[in-house]
Image (cartoon, rainbow, N blue to C red):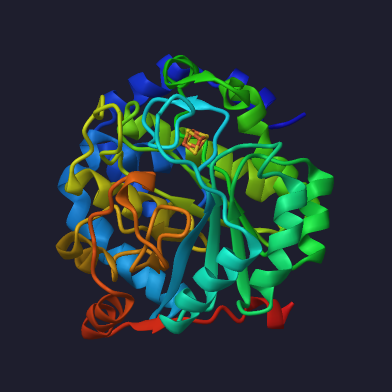
Length: 369
Ligand code: SF4
């Protein structure tokens, strides 16, 4: 039994109908008992919850401060490679894109690490395209110890691996794995993922379970907002999260809510998610799950990010490059997507402090375990 079996039992059409027929009374009931309740999550994600946004936002702020204090964790993505054996039409790294490909050597990685370290970071998210033969387990095992020498917290956002691979990487200091489903609509998924191993919707869907089964401390889920109906995608991610938490309660969980951004040859969003919609989603998840970590990337504009810092997010990136080697030798032709907040980490940290919050550069979690 895995979430794939659970997912097959869910009726998309029924959930969609419930989302769009939710009433004011349903939302008011959901606000009484939102924690861990998937029916409440549905109501809070529905259009009927929009008039309650202010109330949801105030509760989200209070719950986030209660659980996470005034801290906002600072992390930075570091791209290892833009090689990719998949075809995803929304991504600049997609296999058929005629862009320059690059995979960092040990020397190049060490250089990138020292530049990121100088910015003040102690938490790094290693990212790569999905290319098992050239950027697979052996490569990660070679590189992870170099990263761990300098950084206390190391997360991976790469292709799904086997459970034993995750266990092996934990010996080298792996702390977290991000594995985004992109969309929970199998038809939309098939339209956007046309070649390579990522085509397999079910394999992707069961992958976070292998991470949790391996005992990795933190597992990250995410959807690419704009590919499909965001309310339904968010709700199904809530189902996924609830399943994982129930079965693998030793791990912590995080979500990312990236909106589709322009990239070389990329597709425009099919469904637009407004700023207000993104706020609703963050608040709905915070009311649903008070332990949940919520990441905010530089895809969003500075002004909007500043307003979100206090709202419910817990982890923030800044000064990001989305290309391998981008901190040492920026080359926009290697980018995965365009970023929107181009401020330096210091400027972002100052904006966080100006809102009475503390930017935290070091994750002490490993020391507590
Ligand atoms: S989204 Fe990931 S798997 Fe798809 S093309 Fe981009 S890097 Fe490759």
